[in-house]
Length: 356
Image 1: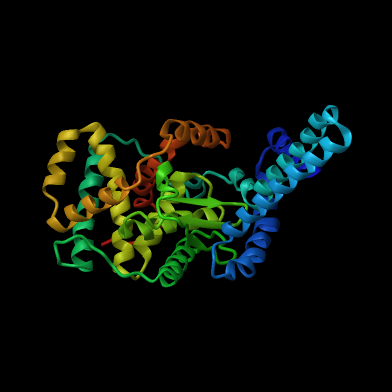
Image 2: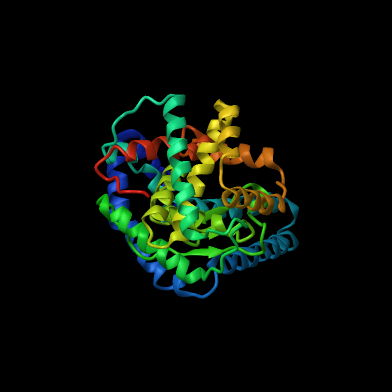
């Protein structure tokens, strides 16, 4: 509980005197140690650490139940509420401390658009439509490089090789911005398939185990883009839109043609759903003009996602929306869509590289 109180004090100090100093100390002196310490120990294990973590949590819960029962037998019912309250406060304090110590203080990082000096751009529907046309052109070229076959892609992928190539590409992108990339972030398959997709989530980063996780039940075309997104969380980026942005650039910077196709496909789908909301007729016409190969890939992506219908979508959205907003992400779930404006601004910045 004491660790939790200390963490709360740090938040109060950040609120009173500003978060810049807190983030500087954390990002330079603590987070790199956490990353290196984990990545070259548990991160080398052949299995996802989340399974070990889950086993520890279950073990702790069983011990808590036994302790509560013993307390009841020895001291009677009157002492039970106090015993439970103490244990619960200790547990909540530990969780609170570990979340922020291992990763959560990254929420104090500066705005990436300001840090990279992106110019402000007034966006309107014409700019978004032009971006959609550009992305569609790149999508068609990328698909042609990967395969000229019009049937949906079913690639054979080696997870470890894919993870290594994405990590290499992401480190290069982030280092070109002058950002540090401590350790070697892991992104694991999370089994059973559909576990995350049932909650409308393709991937998740779990700070308590310092690893990203991807649901392999989604179509393989989506794997690289989602892996790159979760890896960005592992390197300390908290905003979902920023992680989408970094994930896209990571894929487009990679040497592998399939990874690049995954990246432009992920970006194209965000643009498509944005255009579909603003100009449904334009979106429909653009979709109609797509090559058969891309259409079949999109159908396959939707088919695989439909295998796992949402469980409690309303509750999930409200909980996650509240979580994001409580951590300074004012747009909540809509922050994922920020990738569009960030890519448009990035293309006009000194950090842009050629995407063909």
